[in-house]
Length: 170
Image (tube, rainbow, N blue to C red; front, top):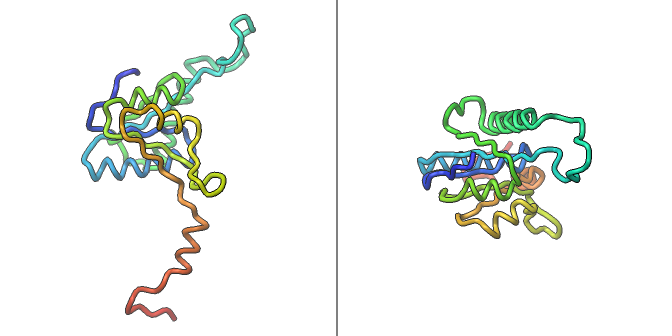
């Protein structure tokens, strides 16, 4: 599928990772708040990429099997991140090609592109992978990188947070 989204959609890159699930949940909330569409995109590449053209084809899945596996990853990620009641609320798009190129094409004309990232990289800086960096460099729409929740930090904040006024802690 090479169609671009309409100008009233939020596109989110989905690869099955915790980071992409965080981005999907965030994008779903934004889509609801803005009364707009949500497009979950999964890019896949044939396993034979990178082999010399004269090399024998590796014994492995066919392109059709890889495409089906990509669709399964997308469906499972949407179900795990958003639950089973998403129905037609999320347009699922599976495209063969390099992830950054596919995401940029699918997001062309959208409201924004949402991507997942780790909470922190080296030296406490945000961790954006190569696909995210490529999208940030070349996107024609706003790009939002959504971090996964830092569970250890959240539990420390909850323990150290003051009690609301008027509440009693036994």
